[in-house]
Image 1 (cartoon, rainbow, N blue to C red):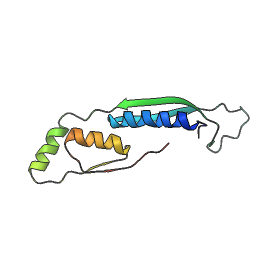
Image 2: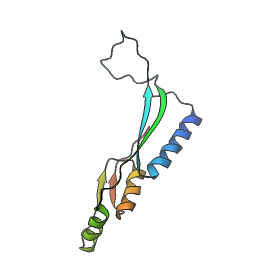
Image 3: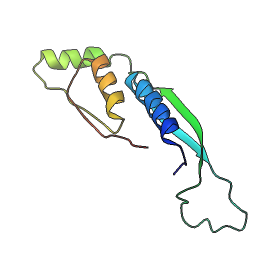
Image 4: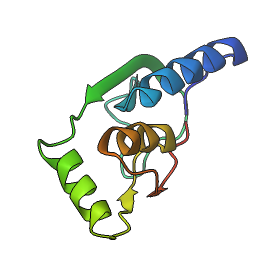
Length: 108
């Protein structure tokens, strides 16, 4: 939806990979100037100006690592299901002690 040249797009994708690999949730931000008389009944699909990225830390709740370990020691197979970016999900899975996850994958 943003007009980025290939070099800029690749640089931002690289930054996203770095952030999600550190277990951050990432949101890309863009803006578009719209004429006051424009029909806003549908979502515009182009001409956005890329503004940057927002990265959020969403720490694992206290006690999750211990709960996962306790379940695993009791023979329970722990699976993490998430809609996070695959690399964010992998970083969190490592942190909580499970390598099994089902994750969505965001694209830009």
